[in-house]
Amino acid sequence: MKKRSISLIIWLMSIALLGVMAMQYYFVRESYKQKSQLFDEAVKASLTAVSGKIEKREIVEFAQEQERISQQKYKADQEKRQRKEELLAQQIKIQERIKKLQIQQFDYQQQYKEYEDDLKARYPNAIFVNNSFYETYIKRKRYQDLINFDVRAEQVDEDFVDTRIELTAKKQIPMVPARDDSTRFVIPHIRSGRVYAIQTAALIARVDAKIAFELHALEQELIRLNSQQFAGAENLFDTLAIIGGKSRHILQDVEFGMELAKRPFRDRVNIQYLKLELEAELAKREIYAPFNIEVRDNQLAIVYETMRSKSPKADTNVARYSTKLFENDLGSSPGLFSVYFPNKSSVIRDRMSYLMLPMFALLALLIGAFAYTLTIIFRQKKISEMKTDFMNNMTHEFKTPVATIMIASESLRDPEIASDEKRVNRLANIIYEENVRLGNHIERVLNIARLEKENLKMEMVDVRLNALVVGVLDSMQLQLQKAGGALQMDIEAMDDLVTGDELHLSNVFFNLVDNAIKYSSGAPDITVKTINVRHSIVITVADKGMGMTKDQKEKIFDQFYRIPTGNVHNVKGFGLGLSYVNDIVKRLNGKIQVKSEKDKGTVFELSFPLKNQKIENQ
Image 1 (cartoon, one colour):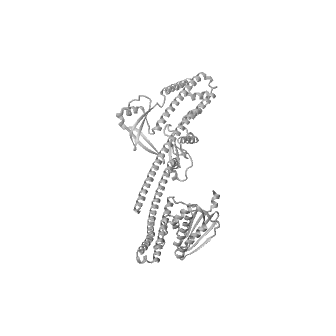
Image 2 (spheres, rainbow, N blue to C red):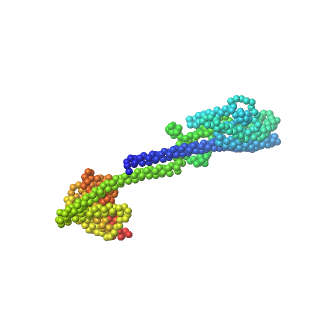
Image 3 (spheres, rainbow, N blue to C red):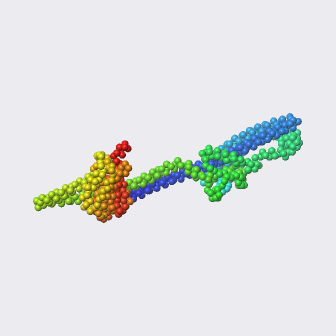
């Protein structure tokens, strides 16, 4: 494969990988935004629910306390009112009726409050309008164009912005009287800071008119009875004061205490209850993140806050949410309740972990496949180059004996040479030797092919390695003498019986010694040694030749790989010998190790398990 084609493949795969990463990044970012919005909505809903519960709890507790106080006063003054039993009995009857009506009115108002809270929870922008305005401008659609919505964004504090919408009439027209006592709301729909559509909603009346009318009548009747008996009494509290002989101002404290809105804001807020309810509401929405709270009065003075960060910048970067407390008080809301989450980002990331893990796994798989593909491409390119070198070497190795045979054959056709028997015999020997040489080359290539296809047959017999090694070295003495080399044998192994193929083991040692002769820059100096190590026999073949670099040492067992010798092509071969050696050693359950230094020589160390040890293991 050409270098340009490989570069093109790398560029295309890189672009595809970057595209996948970009899409994953976009998906993660959008998922994070969506999770953040859902988190914000859940927290705001929790704050609204907590604010409503606090207000309801205050009303119920105050009513219970007032009832308890009234009952205590009633028991304490029971003896003092015996003289006016008939009058007081009538007054108490009226008072009890008033209380029942007040409870009914309270229950009715609570029902209205729940309807109003539910409406505002669904439509935060809902605006109350009186029935006369509704009948005049809203119900009559031809006058709806006279309605004006003023949308204002007010900065409550540095982190809270409140959007207010005021509803007015652009032009005054005769007002249509209200037809009923229902409570009307206008719900504007805002887009880009402007109202593009409106919706109306109707709730029950704020106060039950029938109950209110009866209460008013009973109170007037009570005043009338008091005025008949006590000239200085104006209401039930004055009556009780006169009966008990106490100052009017003492009982006025109870009357004034019933006005909830006049209580100090600090006394109205139960911080512990607020924290518990907030935790419960957040837990309902599966939010368990740590948070800090802050409560301020209507002057923005801090009433309560949890521990703050020492760095002011850190407080401005956290997610902050706020809601008003006691919003239904007359006038403005007396307080502001805020909560902020220092670890909002980490909470959202934890919620997204089930998405992130598969995405990172897929990305890692793609990168691994990309790297593996590139490795295969470069490996195939390298193998292709090595095969080309192999073909060149094989052509050169085959060409020499073929040319020699051709020249010898042509010489035999010469009548003068053919008549000389000695010359004929010498040429015949040359032809025979070159044929043997060709046969050896072909057999070596075929053996490697059989190894790759797992078709190489091994005849497993008992082999004495000491004798085998000595035999191989004796057969190579002539080649060694021709190279002017020296051979040292150190046969120390006492136990040398192994199970293996004698022919292939001979080829293994032949290849190692042959390489030691070939790759010696001067006269070869070879040492062959056998020793016993534990339950195996170790054979070392050492030379003092040109040696190898670390990179070359890692590649010598690859097929077709040959150590480069520069511009001098005096080392013949196909690059198959050591690959063959490695495969045969592994097939015989042996191990092979190489130690080499450049220009200092190489040591091959082969280890085979002894036959007796193999039987014991089995």
